Image 1 (spheres, rainbow, N blue to C red):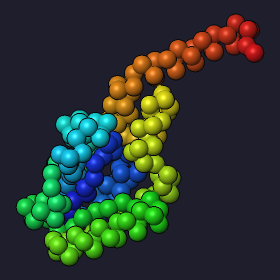
Image 2: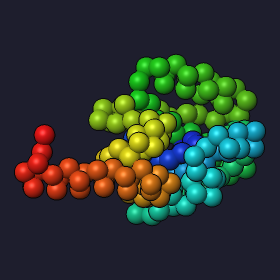
Image 3: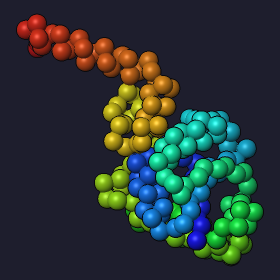
Length: 181
């Protein structure tokens, strides 16, 4: 059985990867689909092409995962690709309430089923928007995202990361030189 794991993936996080890893063990094939909306152009940190490239790199180790994109209704994509299962990751009860409504709508208008996979507890607090904000201040996001996402975020915020590294080096030199504090 084949499934689709849709999202904006701006960028893909370790929570997404956790859900995807588990879905790939359940389903014969999983297509990670970047859903894009022309009306939301400019609202994402990464372009559609960048998100697709990050996803391809982050999922390259899977034999049964592919990456695609689609603009429009997810149920139309599902019909075109002849896929019947939507994978959605859940972090908290608040996610469930929203996702349940969407699952009911997708079943009503497209006759597709949704399978919910709970993200591991260690990723329940991680979201793409939080990761983007932490990275914008040069924070350590290495555990929260796969390497492909971390590298892309560091490239975008290279000046901030360079400044933080310079500050760390300066502090280290002061401490080693005995002038700390």
